[in-house]
Image (cartoon, rainbow, N blue to C red; front, side):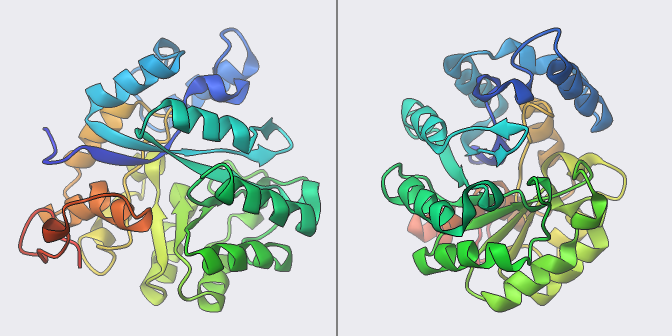
Length: 303
């Protein structure tokens, strides 16, 4: 099935960014990527080994029907990817990639962390901020006071924040959707993208999204795990403007994820929004304004 427009993949990472993504065969990291691919239903768990360069990665995007990819960096003790590296990769992709900055407030502290955030946005041109709350040396809930200045900075600039959590959080007590409710109520204009959808607490994060229209769920690879159908059901109803497609490459194959998404049972308007229109709005991407105003009667509606 071919989408009417190329998809926007909300979570994708070329493997050459870091060994964590399986860049080096016969390493524990490589085997971990294969293991996680199997857990989330990838048919070919070795798929990521074929795109080792930016050119081959972009070619794979094209083949999968993905027009743009959101590259989310990381800055946690086990995986440090500099914002400069993300920015350089984005610029080399000539418009095919959107870069998200990462800052570790435990490692840098508030003052230096905010300075790095400002540099990443104003100087490097990155489009949002990634928060890995439960993965820092001192794990945090998303509502921790130490993170509030970073949400405030994103809110002031009108850019989205990506909060990453899920079943790989080292201590699952910090995989807490209700903490997002606090952030959303504190900053009601801030666009909050919940990467990995706080799986497996699917009903809880859907309840948070029900209460807060500024909470957007991007469960990516966990959409296809047991219980993930609830995300689809919600996106066909009240959550139509609060759901996003993501492959989570290299932890799931791009083409398989795209085809699964197109066949997942979303109604035409919900599919268009989750596939490209909502991300277009979040990142202020160029689009056909008539299409954006068309309403829910077309397959490319955005209310």
